[in-house]
Length: 290
Image (cartoon, rainbow, N blue to C red; front, side, top):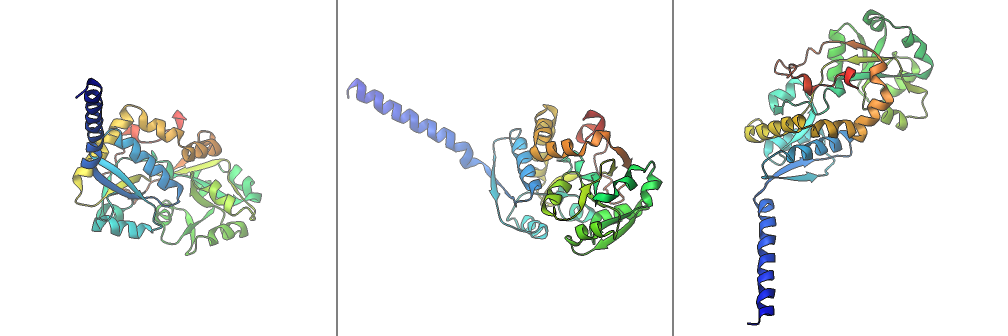
C-alpha cells in the first residue's frame, strides 16, 4: 500500500471514529418530549428549558412537538407518558396531580397585574392612593379562573363571565371598572381588539405570588431533580437571568409597563402551596432591581 493510500485510509477511519464519537451522546441521550403551541409563554418556557439543558448531564435530547392541544390534554399526555414535561401557572390541582419543579420560570412576573380599562376612565385610577380606594372598584375575570378566588379573598368585587372575549366588551361597556391582566398579556390582547376604546391603566400594579413552573409526572423524580438542579446552576452563573431579562416577551412587558414607577399594592394568594420557595429571594423579581 502506498503512503498516500495509507494516509487516505487512516483519515477515513479517523473521520468515521469522530462521527461515531459525535453521534454517541445523541444516541444515548434520553428524549425530553414537550409540546409548544403558538402561545408566547410556550416559546419562553422552551427557551428556559434549553438554558437548563446546558447545565445538565448530556443525557437529555429536547424534542419539541407543535400540536394545538389544551392544557388538560397536556396533563393527560404527561400522565400517560406521551410527554415528559409541561409548564403552567401553578395551582393546588396541578401540584396534587403532577410534580412541580419549584423554580419560578418567570420570577413571579405573572403575578404582577396591570389593568385593561376603558380609555376614558384613567382619571378614576389616577386618584387612587390606598388599597381601600382600589377595593371600591369592580374587576372582571373569567369564570373559574384562580384569580377570582384570589381577588375575592382579598376583599375585591369580581364580576365573571364564561366567555373570555366578553371581558373586553364588558370593560368598554362599563360592566366593571378594570380587567386585571398579567403584565405580559395586555398589549398583545389590545392589539387584537384595537377597534374597542380600551387602554392599559398607567399608574397601578397589583401584585400577588403566582409561580409559573415546569411540571413532570408525579413519579418522575429523577427528571424533576435534574431540571431543578440545572435551573439553580443557571441562576447561579447568571445565564438564567440573562435569558429572562433579554427575552423579547419579558423585555417588552417591563419596558411598556414601567413597573418600577407604578404604585404597587401587594395582596395574598390563598391558593399558594406552603412549599412555595418564598425564602429564595433570588427566585423572584424585585421591582427595586429594575
